[in-house]
Image (cartoon, rainbow, N blue to C red):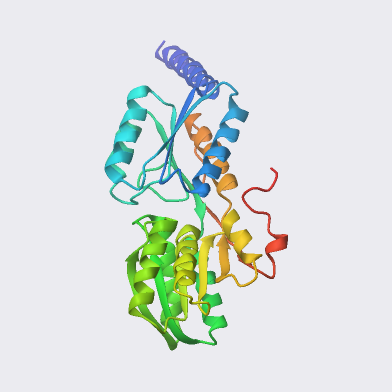
Length: 315
């Protein structure tokens, strides 16, 4: 009798598990919340487009809300809490601080919300898709060292404390440290990941260092701001590199006399779309084997920019 009871119980459990699995497979994606560092940056416009298109492929009627944290940690924490309170299924997160955001992520997960990180890692995120940012900083600064023949005075314009910007800083710093003839005159100035920030930092650098040979901006907006400052002070002999492969950088690389000489590329649309697809898998109860995907960058220069499939390329 007890054997029959066990068989009956086993059958019931199997049916129950099958029903649960079926229910998970049939879960409808109804709402997605997106928080990015700065909506004024075209990079994040492209990421939102990627997330939106991927989510609409899953459910054309999905509700999508995107907000800008403006690189303010407290603002982003409030946005995450608001998404949770509104009952979103998935939060797509571009963390403005790669460590301090952890408690907000944990609260969202405890509330049953799937959290996916893109472009920047976030502690506790169930999936992360981003550029290999150490490699991006490495190739952008190897270009500088090569162009300078291994000798010169250089500076790094860093950004807010996010994993992507910190990793680019590390990649670049390691390259400069390994080059005996390279002197880093400044590497602690925060360009706030914006063109205005890069402009302001570069104005200060050029005031302090009249023998500056090259500058690495940890993203393209800061690099473009640095170029503007150099031109304002009639400095036409400085090599500037960045990371992003943004449309404005494509244009600069195609312009005669540009001080922007190279940029390590990113694919914001594809990166964010892949993060959305993986987040949906997690939402359905099917987490990927690898929870972090790194996309390899390419160095874009005047010599190959015409072959580059950039952010605005047809998808």
